[in-house]
Image (tube, rainbow, N blue to C red; front, side):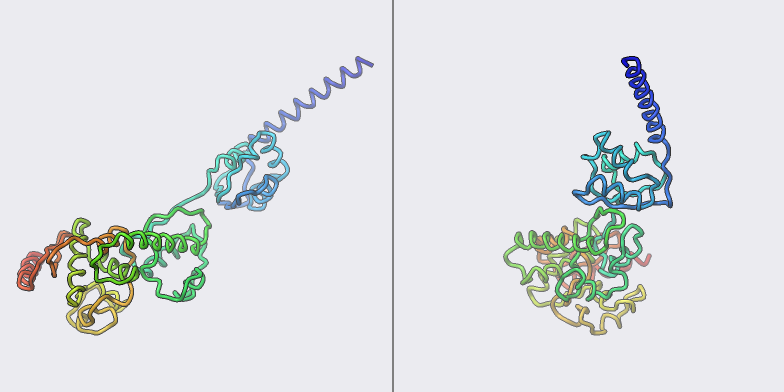
Length: 333
């Protein structure tokens, strides 16, 4: 009897070694993919059983119970990280478990550039292959409705920055983040504004900042450019900003601004209409917002581009005309 029990125990041990060896061999072999790349998401709180099923359904050739028990046996099941994952080449069972537990999620980013207008932003998002294009084909009004926002022109309402997102994430969610970021930063800068500004609301400040953003060639000139426009608004002098005219022309702008364009009245022509344009003309960054709300004190009413990105500032029309002649002549050499 004892000898029989001993043989049975040895048989069990041998069988255990065989099974362990088979498992180790299998766990280190490529699982195979039904297609490439494979993308899947893990939500916070997903159980290992749910994760295993999702991985298999996404296209990894793995038996879900085996993945579940491997993760549990190795202690990794409690460390699975939520996120968005992309698998582009074969990996073993062990490598898959390691991937899920280390959170090597598939994230990328998109940059919204300061000075872009909303059409540029939409074009960049529509062209991004890593975003899910839920807003593709929507009008601006439909898009704002999709974001749960009141009907309004979207220009200027989204903060330019670099945003990380999970591959396959919705462009709607990214736009919500950019909108909320702009709202928070605009509120912060508005609270710190100078007390004697001619702008009466955060939206007017955003509009002014969008013009300053488009007019600035060198960052160090931004506070003085803002001061020129603030000084003009205070004395009800037209802003006479070329970028506002160009924005109002839309697709009719051919790359060259002509005298007839400056004389053609549109809501955005700040040569023919006093005050700010009706909406922002670009996506201003925090520096433009701050410069517009805390402009440098000056007596300047004019500026002209020097041709190197910087601007020459003048107090009188006579000084300005002289600077225009100087730098236009230099630019034609």
